Structure formats: structure tokens, C-alpha cells
Length: 268
Image (cartoon, rainbow, N blue to C red; front, top):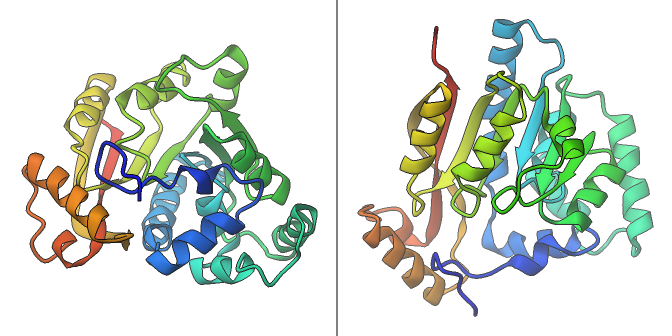
């Protein structure tokens, strides 16, 4: 088992396959569930934004979107259990067959929300699948930790109303979020980030405050997935201890947990 610098097991290979089968077949035994737990919070945020800003079809940017999981859950009201069943290996054997089946899903279900989803991710394969399947409306294949967006990427990022993520913060930092906001030409999209408790949010909070945001943390904690084994659990517990986070009754009992940070523009 190879651990990354944070103590988590490295699962990089599940994000770069040409279709989502490896992703779901690896994560299912680990009980990966944070997108499902995030869904009602994102639903609520969409409704609040639509009513407050009078925007009929908000544009959502999902950072670290992989295969468009959050988009599928929100746009077509599927569940994680449905997605696990779709990609368990019993369906179409080819990528083309999976794509056609997913296109049929996106055509047959009335959208639960009128949304336009853009996915930002470093994996070109995951983005291509999500776009072809009809989950994502647009994609930005970029590493904004390392580079400024190109003019074409800025155009795709511009006009974002809501920025969401379910686990990438910690690997993605304030650098990416700042570059996303700077692409809005003065607009400040609302944000909702589910962040593993092992990753301090202070620097992100400070950077967003400088941009004009006020951030609040929801008191509730959210299961992300089970540990892949004792070695990963020890690594994460060490990271939590180094960050001064009490793991009693949470990570000590075998699950990774996230907290939700909500950022909105400060009233003027």
C-alpha cells in the first residue's frame, strides 16, 4: 500500500481510466459516500442561489469532478448506490457501450435542477467520459495549482455561479480557488467545499476573505469512506494529530470524515 504525503492511500489510478468502472469498483468496498451526503446540501445551496440571485439555471463549477459524479447526482437525481450498480462490471463491456447507456440516462430523466455543470480536473480521461456521457456540459482540463488558466480556460470558468468540491481541497489549495475567482472578472460565486478534517482550511479561508468572502463551517461531520487498511488509518491519525485535530470517536473508529465550509460574498 502506497501512502501519499498526507497519510492517505494513493488511489491516483482510479481517476485516469477511460471509464468509471475502476473508480466505482475500488471505492465501493470502502463505502465511499460523501457525494451522496453532500447532495442535499448542494440542492439547498442551488435553491437559495436561484431565489436570492434570480438565476433560473445556475452555472456550477465542480473542482476535482473526476467522472462527473456530483453532476449526475444533482442534475439527474441518481444515487451513489445506482452508480455503483451501473459500473459493477455486469453492464456493457466497452467504453462506447457505457457511454451510450449513460447518454440514455441523461436523455430519459427530467433534470432535478436546471443546472449547467462545468468540471475542472487534471484527468483528461475522466473529463472526456463525463462530457460524452452527458453529465458535464463543459470541461476544463487544467492544473490550476501549477498554472494560470489559458484564455480559453478562463472563458469556460467565467460566469460561474456556484463552486463546489467533495474531497479535493488539501490537494487543491487556495491557489486554484483564487485563479477561479480571478477568472470571474469581479463576480464572486458562492462556494461549498467538503474538506477532510486532516487538511487545515485556514489558508483557504484567509485567501477567500481577501477576495471578499465570509466563510462559515457547518458543525456536522460527514463520512467520506472507510480506511483502506490499518496503515492508512495510522498515517491519517498522525496527520490529524499534527494538525491538532481530535480523532476520538471519528477517524479512530475507521472512517475518514469531512467538514463542510460555505463561502459567500460579504455584504457590501
